[in-house]
Length: 52
Ligand SMILES: [Zn+2]
Image 1 (cartoon, helix red, strand yellow):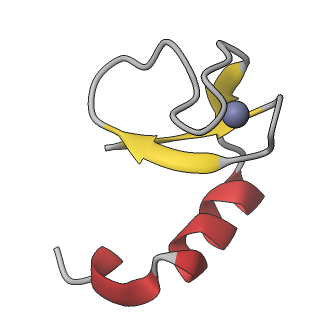
Image 2: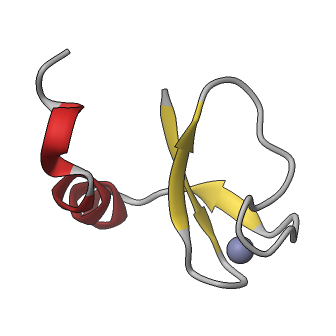
């Protein structure tokens, strides 16, 4: 599972495999999330992330 960040709407999300566009705004302006964004994302979805 990789975490991505949308440069257009600043939406952070995780997906398996390739991602071509943002699930929120539909734009292709996505990039891999930075360490900080990943941390914030983990905090956001806290429930279940660390249970593996
Ligand atoms: Zn977006």
